Amino acid sequence: MALIDKPDCTSVTMLTDLHRRDVLRRLGALGITGAIGQLYSGSLFARSGEAVKGLDRLVGGEVVNRAHDRYEAWRNSMVWHLRKPERYPDAIIRAQSEQDVIAAVKYATDNGLKVSARSSGHNSTGAALRNGGLLIDLALLRGVEIDAARKTARIQPALWSEQLVQEAGKHGLAFPAAHCPTVALGGYLLGGGMGWNNAHWDGIACHAIRSADIVLAGGRKVTASADAYPDLFWAVRGAGYGFFGVVTAMELQLYPLPRAIHTSMYITPLDKLHTVFAALDELSEEKDERVEILVLLMHDPQASADTPPDQAKICMVGVNAFADTEDEARAMLAPFANSALAAASVFKLEYQPSSFEQLYNPEGLDTGIGRYMVDSIWTEEPGQSLLSLAEHFKTTQSARTHVLCAYGVKTELRTDACFSRIANHYIASYMLWNDAADDAANETWLRHTNALLQPYSKGTYINEIEATLFPERVKSSFSEESWQRLAALRKKYDPDGVFHSYPGYS
Ligand SMILES: Cc1cc2nc3c(=O)[nH]c(=O)nc-3n(C[C@H](O)[C@H](O)[C@H](O)COP(=O)(O)OP(=O)(O)OC[C@H]3O[C@@H](n4cnc5c(N)ncnc54)[C@H](O)[C@@H]3O)c2cc1C
Image (tube, rainbow, N blue to C red):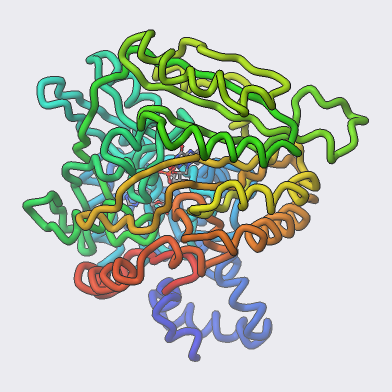
C-alpha cells in the first residue's frame, strides 16, 4: 500500500479500482522488490497506454506510448550513445511546435504525470529518459534566425551547434557552441556550455543567453530575461538537467567571427607530461586570452597491436589562435614554437590555417557512436592532476578513451547566472568503448579515475558527469548558495514537482 501512495509513482495513482486490485494481487505474487522493477519495466499496466489516454488528441506531434510497437525504438533513440539506461517514460511526444509543449505540460500537470525534455539526447547520463511520465522530445524544434544588426540569434532548443555556427558565419558572426557539431544548444546552454574561444567572449556560453521562452508547470509560458522573471533567467543560465521548465526558444548574443584562426599541434610521449605542463605554465603567463590550449591524453593511432599498452599512449597539445590577421595569429603561436613543449615533441604541426567551421569538423577526433561515459573536474593544478593519472591512463580498457584538459580557461563567474563552479583549468575523462561486456570494467576505470583526480578537484561540470552513478557530483557542480537558491526557485515555480529533478534527487 505504501508503494501505491508514493507520489512519484504517478501512473499508479491513475489506475481504476479494477486495475488497482489487479496490481495489488500481482504485487503480492511478485514480492515488493520484483514488483517495483516490473512497474517501471511496464509489464503490469503501463504497456496498456492508459496512463496517457487522450494526449494524442491534444498535440500535433506524434505520441508513442508504451503499448505502441515503435516505443522501444523511440526510447532508444532518445539517448545518443549506445549504453541506453533502463528507464521507461509512459509516453514520448515528438513536439512539432511550442503549442505542443504547452499542451503536453498542461496535460501532465492535470493528470499528475512527471515531465522531462530532450533536445539532442547527448547527455551522457541519459537524463531525459526517466521512469514514468511524459518525455517531450524537442528534436523537431530546430529553427534559427540571425539578426545581424543586433548581433543576436533567436534559436529553438534542438538546433545543432554546427548549424548555429554556419548560420552566424554567413553574417560574419560566431558563437561558442559545443565542440561536437551535433550537440544541440538546448541542453548544452542550460548546463553552461564550453565552446571554442568562449573565454574571450562572455565566458561560459550560457552567459550569452539574452532571453529564454520557458514553459512552466501547468503549461504557462513566460519569457525570462534580465528585466522579466530575473530569477528564472538566472536559473536557466546553468541549472542543467534539474531545470523546472521546458525551454522552447532563446535569444543569444553573437560575436564577431575571428578572421584568421591558426593552430599548432605538438605530440609528446606520456612520460614528458612534467615538461609539457612546466612549459604551459610559463607560456600562459604572457598568453593572449584568444589563445586556447587543449591537452589530450590519448591512444597513439600509430601504435600497432603488439605495442605494449604502457607505450601506446601519447600526449597531444593543441593550440588555437583566434585572431583577425595571419600575422597576428602567427605572433600568438610563436612562443609555443620556441618553447620547451616544442623541444620535447616527437611530432609537431605548426601555424596551420583553419576556420571556425573547420574546428567543428576536426579530422581524427573520435566522436563516433559507442558506449560512452564522461566525468570531469575543475582544477587549479592541471599538471599534478594529469601526472597523478598517467599510470592509470595506460591501463584504459579501450583505445578510444581519452582525457582532455582545457588549460587556462580563465572564465569569470557571474551573479546573474546559476552556473557557479569553475577554476582556471578543466579536466574531463571521455570513455568510449564498443562492447556491452566491457561496461563493468569501464565503470571501474572511471571510479578509479575520479578517485585519483578528487584531491585536485574544485568542483564538477554538470554537463559532463555521470549523474546517475554519482549523484553527489551534481551538487558539486554548484556553489552552496546557488544550490539553495535553485531549490527555493523549484518550490516557487514547480511546487507540485511536475518536472523531474536531477537524477538521484527527488
Ligand atoms: C559528443 C559530445 C560532445 C560534447 N561536447 C561538449 C562541448 O564541447 N562543450 C560542452 O560544454 N559540453 C559538451 N558536451 C556535453 C553536452 O553539453 C551535454 O551532454 C548536454 O546535456 C547535451 O545537451 P542535449 O540538448 O543533447 O541534452 P539532452 O540529452 O537532450 O537532454 C539532457 C537533459 O537536459 C535538459 N534539457 C535539454 N533540453 C532542454 C530544454 N529545451 N528545456 C528544458 N530542459 C532541457 C533535460 O533535463 C534533459 O533531461 C558534449 C557531449 C557529447 C556527447
